[in-house]
Amino acid sequence: MAVQRFRTVEEMAAAPVIVPPGEGFERFVRHCARYWTIAPRVYPRGVFRFRSIGEAQAARDRVTERNVNRLRERKGR
Image (cartoon, rainbow, N blue to C red):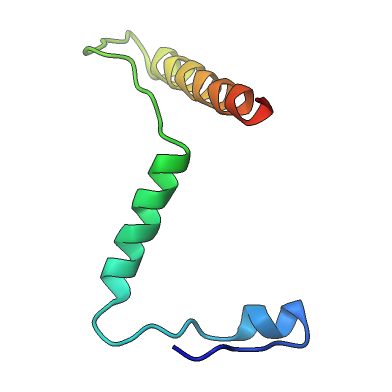
């Protein structure tokens, strides 16, 4: 793969990503695996029943907040 040089960030952002034919999906999968290794999500175990959509959304927000706090603590070390 050739090295590309750019004069500005805008020029770099506008450049197409060069991927050999047939490797696009594999590249995507590698990026996903790298992302989940860096920032894995932790879900509570079990099946939950909620009386309303609002209650379910509040539970989802709590799980999201715990994940964010856990990642922030890990980053601070």
